[in-house]
Image (cartoon, rainbow, N blue to C red; front, top):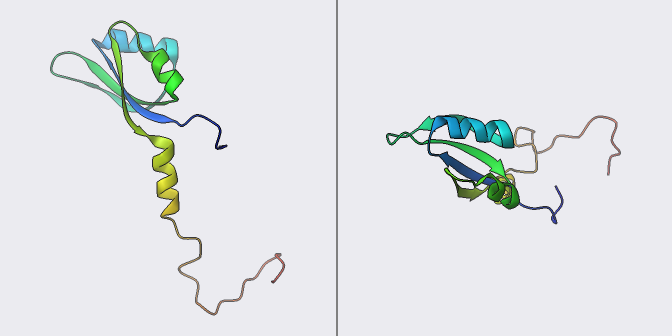
Length: 102
């Protein structure tokens, strides 16, 4: 992913009823995460991953889109937590393989 591309957002898409949500998923085919959930008031929601433009395009009558987080930034933060070395290798281990020893 290049630094000039748009960040991916995790959004919650909420429709007034199940049929409206089904129609949206069938037409727009967003990248969804998980299963739809039905609220006590009859509305249905599902989480999706989309750019800001794609999220705006999902909004229509009977459908609202709420941004939960910037998934790109969260992913980069989690990658920064990962160590670079092999924590299980002994401190005096000599690398083996086809690489050039430096």
